[in-house]
Image (cartoon, rainbow, N blue to C red; front, side):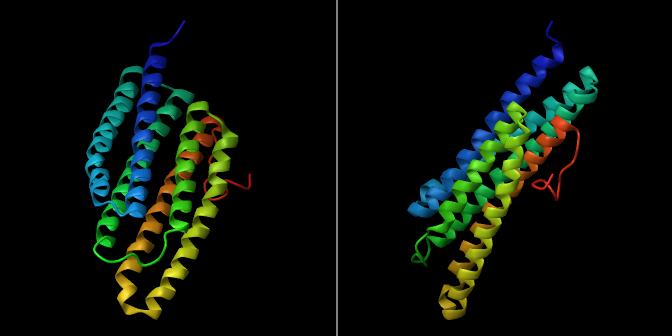
Length: 220
């Protein structure tokens, strides 16, 4: 017989999937706005953040209400604790997408500094990490979660590479500084998105196995 709390947990999972979809869409659109130099699209990303914020509050309230009503133990309690953390990570991803959109609006005030090649690649990798981290949560797939954690190093390498390249632009031409800094910030926002996806993946391992793998996720 189905427990009442199972209905709540299933509904909570659906809301987290909705939240992840909104965050992933915002990330994709923010990069599209940057690459296509589309100011209107960047503004749409900024405006969409209100929907993500509203859903975050609803999910938090649902988690707390479920805890109060059913006083869950063991795995159910871990699930709810992880849902609260995942909800926060997804909301922060939405914030990072907004940050990218804001940097895009600044970049549109000047000519393009350089062809955007690595940033779209980095964004595609980060978006895939977001999707896979949520899929691992829904399926409680530890191996998929660990693969997300391993991919974080690749995003970090892109971030380091872009920083070095853009620093060279700034040293060669002072007029490039503002644009280079904004592109460095875009890269950092993508790196933070990947970090949040990694946080979710680490939480999945904790949920399924009851053990923390932070700082050494790939090695265990």
